[in-house]
Image 1 (spheres, rainbow, N blue to C red):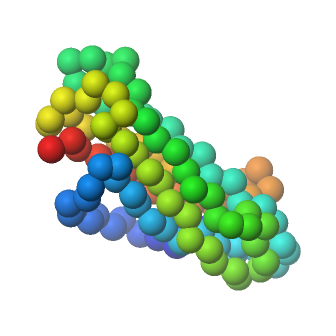
Image 2: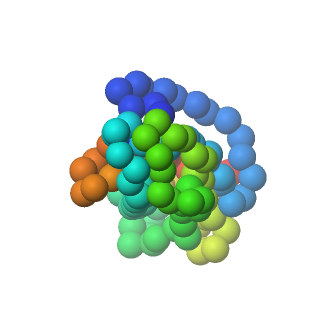
Length: 113
């Protein structure tokens, strides 16, 4: 599970480029299983609406989690890798799953200063 499941948390703060968002993922089941994280860019505000921001995930290591075990993962978003202008922003959705079932998620909105 992504630890902030069933909560609505907002954090606004400065970051450097690339933006690095850390989160804990955990196994809420009674059995060892692999966690899979998927990151999607779902919206961008820019004159260039088809522009994709460079982004990737640093998965928990190892991805096989024991019951109740928690590990750190990172979402990394780099507006410096494309022609992103100051004031442009993009929203990303991170979804966590185990055994083909969604166990949680979080959205990140990143703005280039």
